[in-house]
Image 1 (cartoon, rainbow, N blue to C red):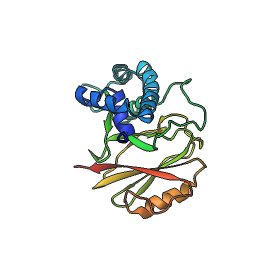
Image 2 (spheres, one colour):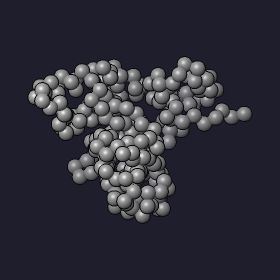
Image 3 (cartoon, rainbow, N blue to C red):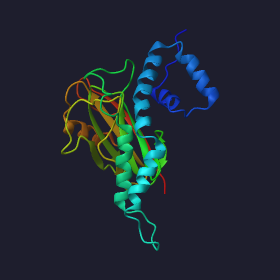
Image 4 (cartoon, one colour):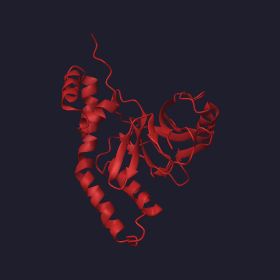
Length: 246
């Protein structure tokens, strides 16, 4: 009997210590019978280890609060300015990006890894990892990361329930080149708008440069469905959904 397919998300949660001990033990027993999953877990741990040493969550929180302290609001108003959350998003993105020296050779990807998206809700004490389908509110600051696409070109586009389409990556000024990290944060976080029902994010990846307009048009014509109606030859897509709540 072949071992069950183990998703990158489960491996990521195992590496970060997010699984309950019994579930972690069962998963490690399965990984012991699956060389591909073992290789992917090892790659995730190699990526996360230096990140956690360089940007431990407690240190990220302390740095956010230290810099905010230099611009503290008067006692009558404790609301954080918009730039504060944007700065927190920048630190979260730094946490998600591997430090120099950890890049794999161009074009090298972990065997079996499927390109996809991860989403994090940026908070003043760091970031909360979100599952696809998770609830979110207008004003939440979101940081996206592309995973499993090292060595590939990527385009990230979202569509909401009124049909508004937003290009998240690459935007003007971004370097259009293959991604260099197993988990690569987009250059900037963003705030969710007041769309009523949902925001669906698509990542399209390819070994060749992608025509951005073609991808944007495909997302627009999808009507918010998970599957895009048309993709460039050789391209793959993955999707991530946030459900809006009042």
